[in-house]
Image 1 (cartoon, helix red, strand yellow):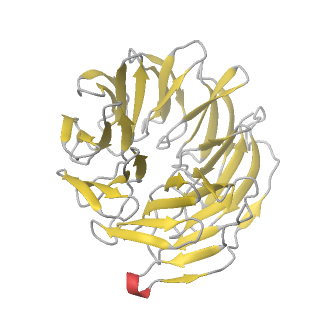
Image 2 (tube, helix red, strand yellow; image 1 turned 45 degrees about the vertical axis):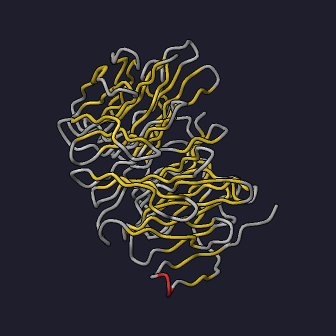
Length: 396
């Protein structure tokens, strides 16, 4: 297959933008040590990459010219792309001057085209061709230099490819992914730092997103019209997850009021709310065990990772870490055992038994872990931390 170019792009006003090609020098540290400070640990570091800034958001996997590529953003104002199988090969990095990139990278593949979408510290949404490195378009929202964290999500309904994101100018936007043209916008009453979630009922898709105005919104993905909304007691900065059980769909979202809410996804009727003792910034992760029981795993500012029965809201177990759990958990079946993987602000990446909440192993890094993990075959967990490192750890 055609090999992607090694390049970086400097993002300036459009009339000053220019392409430059350059090899990306990063430190690739291969490790085979067991987790530090835990004699029973079985997690192993497959590799570690150091970059120039902290990594807050989750990495994503995308196919670039036939090559599985891990893409992630950093506070050093770069977005990186590395080969999943050879993390020191085929790297690219769009540059954003002195503007940090907090947003995760949304991706779109169709044929030979691969597009990357992310929000820079200048509050612009960027669309970049991952193969050529060309900036296809940008869209300005909010105010330059203002903290922007809503991660874009791409949705293709078979007719139009749309990209959705929230902005610090209080609005939710839907843009044409190909051209950057605004399809619609919806104004809330406060800045939006949460990332959107899209679910299609068959008759049409709905965008779910929270705002700092304490409200959780359901919007028609095609028109932007309000479907329903629910007012919580505090800001909503985490993402939502949808669970479909036979003919019913439930959407879960956490709020800074220390609760995780479960709504009828179509009507907005509150099914239940699960109370924690701290802000629920973490996005719930829905998982179905081999026996058919569905749960969601979620972290809290009360330092706990929770397992909750998705149908009833009953707590199954809680696992306490040493600090806030901002990252969203991931769960994967390893043999006959479900392993829940999550990082904490105590600098530690944990693997927990999904059935019991018992600790399986832990690995101490050098910085807080806000990044949710990308799960790859192996199984492997790829995540970043506040000490400028991207880790790949074997979960078994």
